[in-house]
Image 1 (spheres, rainbow, N blue to C red):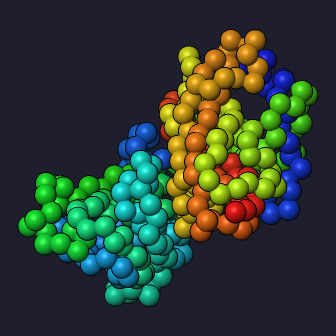
Image 2 (cartoon, rainbow, N blue to C red; image 1 turned 90 degrees about the vertical axis):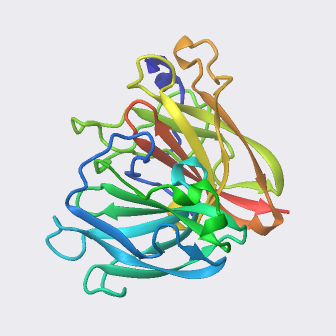
Length: 314
């Protein structure tokens, strides 16, 4: 599937200055099979489920470790979101275990900024194992700026702990150029499949291009995405668009819709593989940025990431 397209579409491997190449992005929570996180200990001591926290700056504390690590905590980062990261939640802070928290050794303490909108929200924590690539995910309800007794049904939702399994990406030796350019973007290498082979995913951004100047306001982004592991259809569950790296404070600015017109309309295998996304950039976003595109396979749960450097002008 998609074989003729791969022969026609050129991958541009000459990266402009400041271009970002993202390797081995972790699989997303909602669409992956739960793994065994019994070797990972990830707990929050503050806040607790159902607690009240005021808007603005707050301190989170807890412990995160992977007992399989030969040295150190075995958790290289913990990311905190208000709302599910993979369903439009937004990043509020990061933590790195290592003894700076209230407990010895593998604890963490970090400062986050809670939204000014009052009400019940779900706080999500994603602890990433540097040993296996697994993510241990905690979600718990908190009341922001109001009495928990008046926060509605969400505040009574029980805390949830889940786990996903990621596979480390293989090393990339030499990029391969193909004939017939249609789109120009920054390609990536994603995770290996279960047998350790190369990824079967493809993600290309046609608009914007690397180094483009774009302007404040609404704009339409376009590209191609598919997973050759799919028996029918493009095999892509969704594509999220962030201004700057999602895992380093980037802002979610939109979601792509699959099914846009294909740049190779004569190829029936590409039906539904085109995507488009309408995003809106504000005056606070001007300057140099990297626009990140995160495509999730609906077949394997693998995630592929493309970064395109742009300059946002008024």
